[in-house]
Length: 280
Image (cartoon, rainbow, N blue to C red; front, side):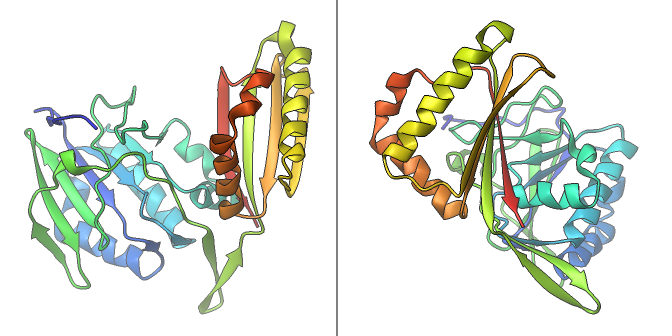
């Protein structure tokens, strides 16, 4: 963690930290807060911290798209920080995943952010009730979400941010008639794309095949595991590991930390792109 974080004088933004459940009850409340405080007219970036989110319903998609429109109206940026995989799943379902391309950030291990779009991104600081932070002139005003209003509280202490916080949401809900129906995840998918170059495709494929054999030799029971190399785009090998759920994936991560002999295979972990998804 850095010793001190200084807010740039020219940084203007509305930063939203939603609570654990983002649903059709919360979204109208946030929209009411925004209207009451005329935040749609505030000329600044829109940044969304989603570390706390544990459950999401389909109303969140419309709220995300609204935030993007407001940012674009002012010629500013919209950034979504560490969204749980469930959010990307929703955007794909509604055909809106293109709207967040280039707008999703993942924090460094110390919890800080670096973006080419915005020179400064405040780190995530927890607040179970949810919080809105308004940045301008090198200062920040913070407001906690209540049932009826935004309650002004002490300015958020950016130097109290935790190290990288895992995203946790594993439940999604869709509207059915007048109620909501939960769609349960039946798998957690980890996709790794290895950009190895045309001359190393076969070597990369072989090493990953050995690596998967090592995993299975340790008794790890993947739900499914796939590996393929393609000519388009050339020089890319993709592996897709499907786990029973997020907990099963965490068990896999623990295995990698406890027994590091897998590193002797010299598996290609450079030039790597990673994606995570829930399967429904």
